[in-house]
Length: 315
Image (cartoon, rainbow, N blue to C red; front, side, top):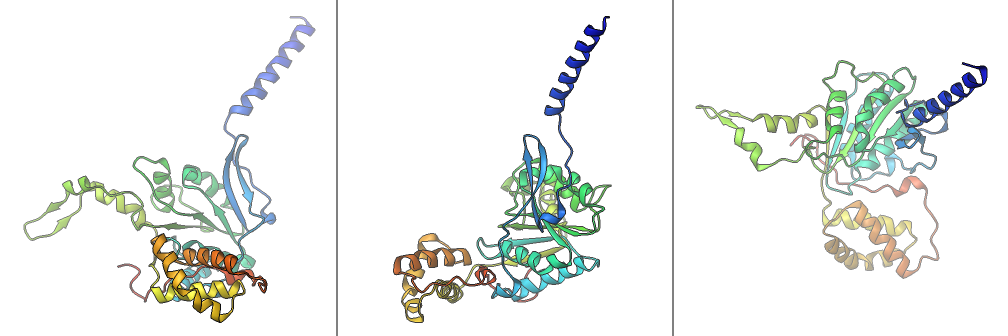
């Protein structure tokens, strides 16, 4: 083979290798950890990336009202984690719009200066959790993997990956990582009537759940801490409406006059929650003029949730 022929062959081989590299899966690379305190895991055409969240929603634990029981339990667990003490993975469940996600973001703001970091992972990307665990294992920071609005359908691959990371895999998560997840339902897999067909009863009345039921509750049980949220009462809902209308600059008289409309708004939405209260307040304030509106501090804008007495979170 002549030199020109050999050179041409090498050029073609390099071009082929370049094309193969573009389609082969790439490893997750470390981001600039100093660029932000929160990151999003994303799958791009070029491969997986951790994107810094440069405009983080600002809120504080103090701004979350009517959630003293939930706030204390999550804050205590997070403080233990940041201090290097034993801490639990957390599942926050309950009514929509009651402040589950807000509480996690407020904990991040509270402890970010002490090295706490957050990585948001969508349900569809949970199969890549082992790669994220490996990437952060040797970092000095403390990481929370945040999964919002978590639930699974039958056969989804992310369910098995999350279950293994929580408890049950040979290569478990490192000590500097916890998983905080929110969900509108306690059991993260749908339950079917047919699941009860394998339930057995002994002669003395003892109940033995079938394997299908055991499988569907096992994921929730791997979270060491459960924190529950419940819908607002009417008075609690109206109190949050008033808080938001005051933020938008309305007078006490205007806030009192808004109460009937606020109740109708909640009735039409079929929900009384902090999110619904905020949405009503935005609409009402815009329709009734807010010339005197002066934006409040960001930490005053967190939606509230109803407090649950100690001991009821596991009911």
